[in-house]
Length: 366
Image (cartoon, rainbow, N blue to C red):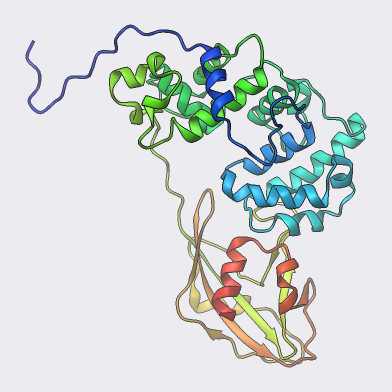
């Protein structure tokens, strides 16, 4: 058979061993990461801390989560304390971590655990999955880590490890069910919680998206992708659809006494319940020529809105956003319009401002 010109033959995978849980656990015992929420060897994991960390870690890095976790735990050391806290306080402490629906679900889940289970997290995966904000992955992770249940907790790291181990050719997201099934087949008869965390650590530190350290992997001899010679090609991924750009205007009004005009977003929807400066709607066909029609109406004040140079850009999960920023100074006695309030500049750090609004204020206030 003649090969097509320019095409390299695919390496044939040699016969391989099956990945053994004991090998991964031995590696984990030597190299486990020290994380604020992780029980030390011999300690019993705290389900509250496991749950809190897993919610925070959704679509967020360990480095970003660690200081938030420490602050939350210091403020609300138990699920009962978190359930009793006002939602606004939870949103304020969450501000900057992103994906703000998680904070609302976190608070609702804490209340549900207190009301339904007397403040004790259920151990069964199905019961965990019925709580607010807990999806299949999070339910499995809590069941495995907190209660040592034989549950397959398949996050992005684990997905990558398993896809490479078995050279899964199907593309994500269609391959998720197959990858989960393969992951379930790897769970050992004992130490299911440690095994779940070991898989996560392996993906985070060895089986990384780029330049995996295959020579250090305890499953090197069992990995089909390594034997093929192309581990970075897995997992296969379908091309992502690009969200359409949305645009809008943001209005930063500063009173002469050093206060800025803020309001709270509706409780549901994008950035629900978070704090913002007044803005126009964010649309695909925003016409900046009509931007000032969306400026806040300030009684007895006729602010001169200045269009600041440049724009604030931010990328949400499903779309990029571009905001034109307008600024104005108004007299000290100017009243806030309905639904808005004046907040001292010195107190902004205590507000539940999402990152996009922090960018707007930094752009306007310097």
